[in-house]
Length: 215
Image (cartoon, rainbow, N blue to C red; front, side):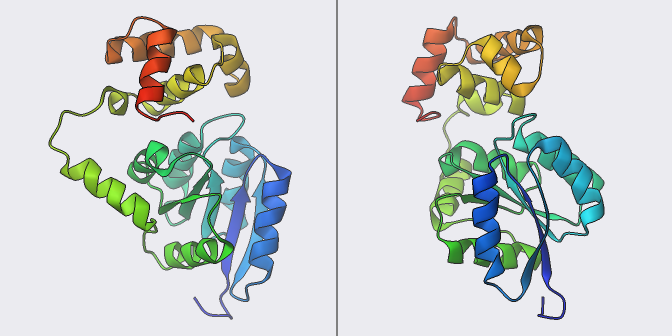
């Protein structure tokens, strides 16, 4: 990318302060411009269709649907858009799922501004972006000859339900936050307990803490 063909970036994050912070960081660069922003997953999907953006900065924790769901939909509709996932979660929790779903990169929100700019330029050029720490985690993930951990067998929504329950949220809380029915969340809970051979929320929470899936 050159100055005459700036990288157009779209920001999707439900926190206004985060969006403003990202815009301020990118305002100091000559080759990157912000083409738009959204505060939820549905708006992100709708707006990126007409934004003409090259890179989408997508928060993995959106209020109406998971960032990975949004990622899959956007890559289905606009495969040329490079999606850089942003998260407050430990990198190894969602990074592998994001990359498998089509993300061009994964970056922790606590990363330095210079690293964010570098990541945007790299994915805009058609490359993947991961940190050194994540590269090591990926190497361990694929080189590990041990049996696949039970939580990696879960669907994205089941995994999200697992982490939310382990964080102390009730089925009703999760249903309200994800704009789904209590019956649907209960179904996800039943499925993940069955897949992981667990019996109740206490065992589920213990597993999540032991495996560092929640803070």
